[in-house]
Length: 295
Image 1 (spheres, rainbow, N blue to C red):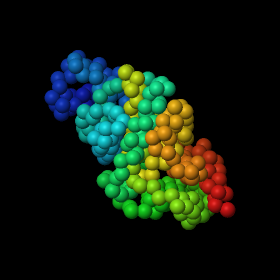
Image 2 (tube, rainbow, N blue to C red):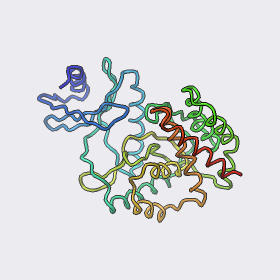
Image 3 (cartoon, helix red, strand yellow):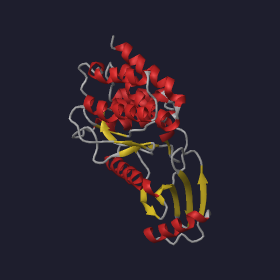
Image 4 (cartoon, helix red, strand yellow):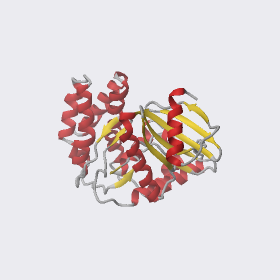
């Protein structure tokens, strides 16, 4: 066990009341933002995310999202054990779940369950607290108008971050034009606020050991359900059974194929801001594609 985590394990023992004697800590790969570990002890099997102490609020917001998703009860999410801060570390402890790829049956059930979650109306756009998308701040003040929310708190913010990171020129020029004409991409479509996972790419959904669908690593807020569905298409990983089941239970609006690009532009801009210029051309092309739709 790394020496730097010995104190954290002792802290978790005190926090949870478990002895955690003769525990085994295994480093897990695959995370871009956090370090991840599996902690096994007598009667204990936990998944632990660790980051810098100043990011404790990020884990608090993820806990709030998982708790609300669990309360809705449509799609399984991991149970939260605890979260907090100890010395130089922020942490989030979840139940460890053996994951496997979504089978055709699991994908279809996931589509049905997600449709059920999206059907439950919420009172406003935004959320009760701010959170993060990756490690980027995601602001969630309450709005009554969805297009204003997306303009101010999603697309506009990512373009602002991109400018601060030195990405100017065509991206900002086209971005400003797009923000000015955002209403035209919605026409008569008026979504109701749905609880969203918020970061629903293929790496954040799987099946459990029984083959049942589940999702994790949320960036929750109340928004247009199309934003969740759009991200499932951004990097792949969801089969046709998922989309057929979703459409059968909650059919998408005819304008979705165009708005899909709008919603995924948010995530590509976020990747630009997190991971660098390899996403610049894609972001610029998507912005230009949306403007072409408005001619």
